[in-house]
Length: 288
Image (cartoon, rainbow, N blue to C red):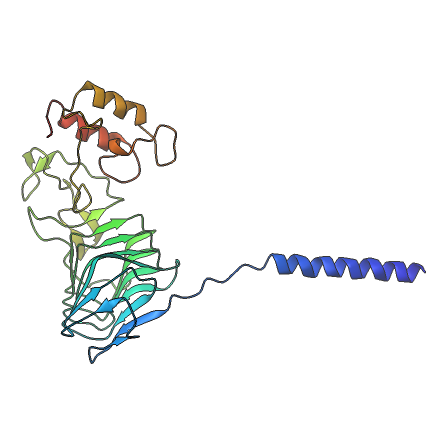
């Protein structure tokens, strides 16, 4: 009888253990499916939300939740401001071995690598939002690429350069500027090609340095395409009322009880001294 009782207890414990394992199994994130732009110009699968009339310009027709591998040179990928979204793994756009490919107007988010270049050169990456990826852009054995007017926001690492010694271009000169980097902490007190003339110009006073061969000489203070409006309360004038609203929201962030989206002049999801400086510099100005 005692042996039966012990066996029953052991069986019960074993059953509990098995059930515990079953309920603690974590789902594996599936790798994003893949869309290919083949070397012959075709789109695989043909049902993907991409179209091309000439096998040169490829245009998004809707948002895409797959990875894209480019196998063709001398083409343009235009996202027309649609989103390419992953599941926190995989690669957004794979440009391995590519030459003269332009990637523009895409919001690339939630991948392990937003954009991947390997043995790639003379590519142009412009006017994209690259956000919330592990690596915004990952470069390996790649040089001579031009990358500017993109917004790199809240990536775990904005840029990862696997192979040192390869130089790429990260800005379009002055006053056109380079990229917006959400982790850039420089100031904007000066202007000019050497950032030594008094007066702000929307370009950081110091460069954004990735390594000895990769530097954004003219990092953007605001996200590309965004124009700040220091008139926080929308009454057409920057005055003490705007300053009061800014001081109340100081130190807040989205979800905080004092958060005020209009005070976040840099649109970096944090209200800090940089936002207050922008409002102070425009004190007394009127807006239509």
